Length: 204
Image (cartoon, rainbow, N blue to C red; front, side, top):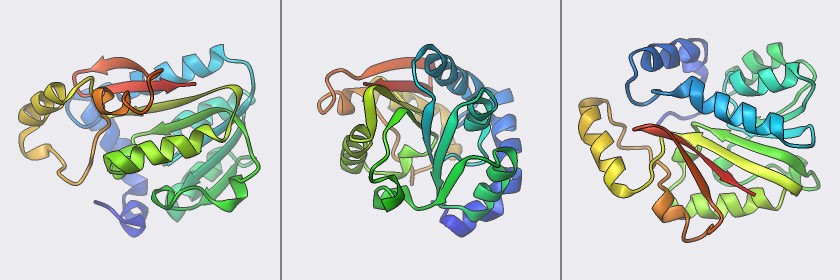
């Protein structure tokens, strides 16, 4: 698993790495644009303009919302990712913080109409995912929603099939979200399958 220095080094080539994987329709970024596009369209259907992006990376999705007039807050632990995203969104509130440790104190009294977490929550184990989602829910407005896009699966069998097909590409350090595990804690969880190895979770 990459640490913050590793992500700093990866920052400049991150978008290209995603493009290559998505274009070849292979794990881990098969369906990447559709995952982000699905979240974008759902946010656009909501009321409210205040968005938190957790693990925003180079700001691909949040920049599009920023350009549409949304108020963007974000946390990421890579200084270089923040620099790149900050150039695209000079008015955004971007905080350097490791979300595996929870949420920064700057968010303590903030509420959001939408909370986004794309290709990041797999850094948490299953129990930590549940705890973290509970924390995020405390920062939603009454009509707010959480959107989690990632390498994601309906059930363990679907994950197993993707793992077999991915072969040596499979990252053993990443713990991907699976609906049949999360729904025990979040009965209202919605899962939108994008490809055999990607999807979007929606929580209100």
